[in-house]
Amino acid sequence: MNVMFCNTLTFVSEQSVQNIWRADHTRPGCLYGFEHTDVDCSEKTGVVTARARDRRIDRTQQLLRGALLSLIKEKGFEALSVQDIIDRANVGRATFYAHFDNKEDLLASGIDGLRASLKERQRQALSQGAVTDERLFAFSHEMFVHANEHRDVFRAMLGKRSGAVIQQLFHKMLVDLVRDDLKAMTSRSGTGSPLSEAAVQFLAGGLFGLVIWWVDGKMRLSVDDVNALFRRLAIPALKAAVH
Image (cartoon, one colour):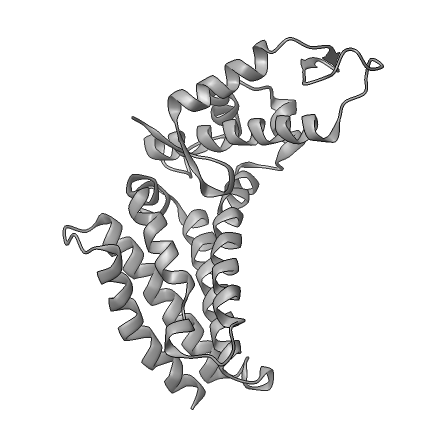
């Protein structure tokens, strides 16, 4: 079963994406503009509920993200075009640009979902009181779980054919997460110094490399093992930067 990259970096099968498209384009209803939409035809023509619009937006964005990932897996991010994406998703060019500015914007919107999930896990851990070793890097286990469950997707996103744009977005997400952990351990006046920023870049770069090595490597470490390995290396380095 082929796997695709969809809303908030969740994953559905290619068949499910096709079913979304069929349901979206065959559902009976009033015409709204040039496309079918979820409209209660018993109401005044042209009135579309916010809920119906939201569902339609979600479905369209799922189709576009699914098309994007399948193309990345086939030809890499750099080589694909917006035309390739809309042809694969079977939507119009106007529909694409109603949601995204370009293929980079589409890519970033998917990574934003993973970022939000990891930051919420981090926020919950850091809000429980004094920062302890157990609460540092609380996001990392969830990230490794996600990467493990969708290993082929992460290979496509971060491997040699992914392109610099994807790697930069993923790396920036890790930098932001590591920086927030550093802020939790020190006063804000202590952040932004050469030492603290060097630690952020060092740790985020190390985690980025570790993820790529793990999802693409022959050493089949478990999620718990690779997360423990990261924490064993990262926590002392973080503490060294703030003491």
